[in-house]
Image (cartoon, rainbow, N blue to C red; front, side):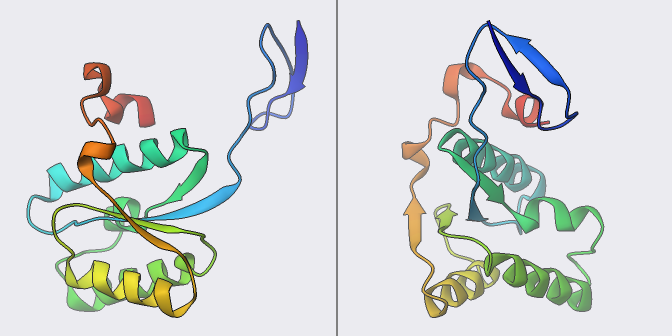
Amino acid sequence: MTIHENRWCGRPVKSKVAAPRFPTKRIYICSPLKGSIEKNMERAIKYCRFAFDEGFVPIAPHAYFTGFLDDHDPAERELGVSAGIELLTGCDPLWYFGERVTEGMAREINMAKNLGIPVSHIDSEEINLSKNNQNFMEVAL
């Protein structure tokens, strides 16, 4: 039996397995939002889970900024995009997902390239979105 400190509560925890390795490398998740917003938000959460499972801390501003910023208000949308780009500066690399690159995604991708941050397109087929028919919305939350 192994005893390790729980990162979230700071208390020792007894476990039969080794202490879990918490990802420390931040990755910027870039994917479409407009259009089918609900479906795209669900996909963004799945992309975050995929990145987490690959050993990264996912940074996906579009997945949570829309909870307090109005994406339909041009001024608030610009604030969200600008704040997201600020978060991008602390990430390495940027992964983008989806069949198309939106205007907002293009800005993030171009900024990453200008900052020398590696950029990769991850095809939906590379991540099995129906992985074991699991509901990733429940798992991620």
